[in-house]
Length: 144
Image 1 (tube, helix red, strand yellow):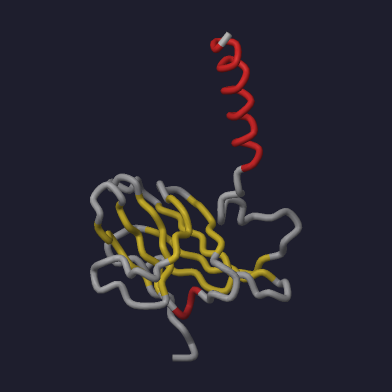
Image 2 (cartoon, helix red, strand yellow):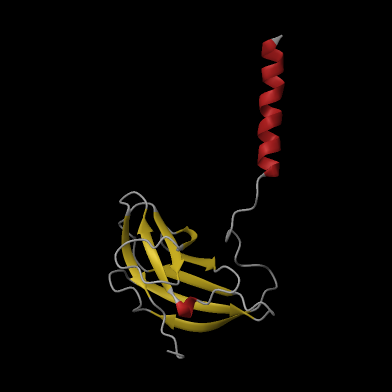
C-alpha cells in the first residue's frame, strides 16, 4: 500500500514543484520585439581577460539596460558568475553586488535590474569554485 502512495505522490509533487517555481531572474533578456540600442562597446574594459563588453538600452519607458559579454577565447576559470555592483570591488565581492547570472564564455547578454545603469557601477567576474574575484570592469561614464 505504501509503495502505491509513494509511486503516485513523488511524480505528482515533482511536477507541481516544477510548474510552481519562480522564473529565473535574467534568464531571457532577449525579449522578442524589444528594441535595444547599442550605447557602448569596448574590447579593453577587462584588463586580465579578452572579453568584448557591450551595453544596450531598451527603448521602453523603464530605460532597461543589458550587458553583453563576448569572450574571444575560452575562460580557464571554473564556475564564473557575473555580478554588478554600485560600489568598488577592492578585490572582494561587495555584499551589495547583484548576481546577473553564470558566464561560461562566448556571447551572452544579461539584464540589469530595473533602474540600474551599468555606467554607474562595475561588472565583476567571480569564480565560485575559487571563491575569488577574477576580474572587474568599469564602463566609462560621461557624467563623471
